Length: 231
Image 1 (cartoon, rainbow, N blue to C red):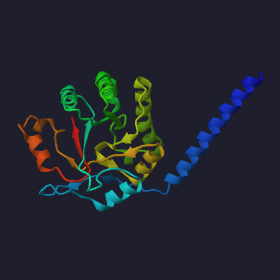
Image 2: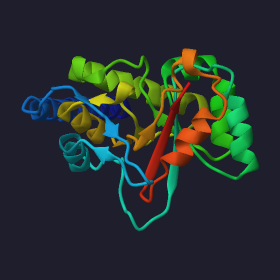
Image 3: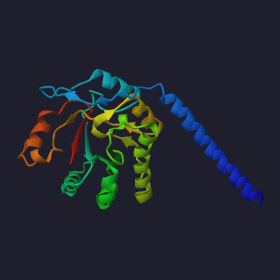
Image 4: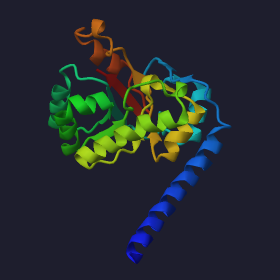
């Protein structure tokens, strides 16, 4: 009987702590802006770094996000946004494996539910899985609790399925706000954006011979470089 009372008391204490933390977080976010920020960039010539919107970059840096950085390091970070599978991911994984290259794959809930074998392969082959939310909604339009649910429901689903803990987050459509960054940071995530992308998400423009290769090689730049592909 005594042990049961202790267990109940402990459970109530945990609930009180969680409620307290949620209350503090809610109060903190009340003063933060929900204004939508759309991530964008302007490509430069001659392999120079792209021009990023200074206001967007400033708030991203404030919350320790990643987009572009040290000009002394010649590094390329390859990232893929996966909302759905169009039949190319296995081929991409084959090429990455053949060349001993690791990438970051930002997945949605739909992708995890429909392509668990591909997600499992990514993990087994040493790639990083990032959080792209459950439903790929524009987060600034959601409430605090809805934002957290979009992120943590996917976090839990992947952990339950593959015992994998995600730590990197990419906002759907590249749309975020000060409040969104605050919430994702408090959830333990690092927000990752990009310094190059092209319209391979548009199925009507796919299949153009050498288009992607030409675009990428023409826009390599001597910075931390994040190329994103969405298919």
